[in-house]
Amino acid sequence: MENSKQLDQNKKEKPQSSFSKVTIIGFVGGLIWSVIAYISFIFHFTEVGPNFFLTSFQVGGWANAVTGQLVSIFVLSVVSIAVAFLYQAFFKQFQGVLPGIIYGLAMWAILFLLSPLFMSVIRPVKELQIATITTSVCIFILYGVFIAYSVSFEAMERKRNESNYSNKS
Image (cartoon, rainbow, N blue to C red; front, side, top):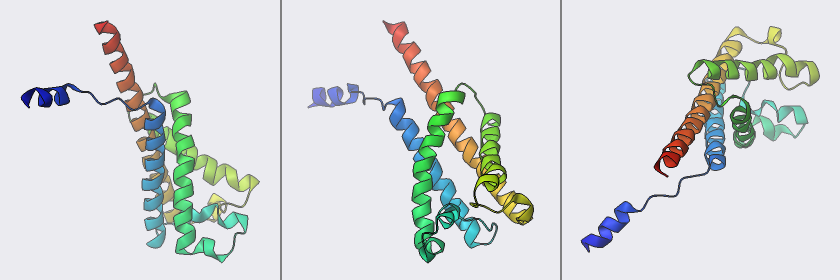
């Protein structure tokens, strides 16, 4: 009996692949920060809810209802997976909070400054209330830090584990 307990304790879990970890980081990051954006929208801290992209596709009135917001939260969570992989591909070697702040600000700039030039997803920044700008910048900064810090930490842990494994051989 005691011998089987010891065998169970000695078994190590098979580590998750980098792909699955980054997928989870991206999805959870998108889910958390989209929900926070929706809460900010409900309490009128921002005029832009998670459904900002649905309303530009003329999908009907449901896009402005709770259903549209929830569908948008799910879609943004899935899109966030690509955002996490983009960070992993180009910036995972950067450590700390500052790269995440920059990444979040870059995503905000693309969405709020560049997208109004090409499509009517969001009104131009000069037409938005200061509360919307401030809230959305803060949410994007926190989202960027979440993605950057999590992906960089995962990459650093993987590198450390690989180096420990190669030292034991």
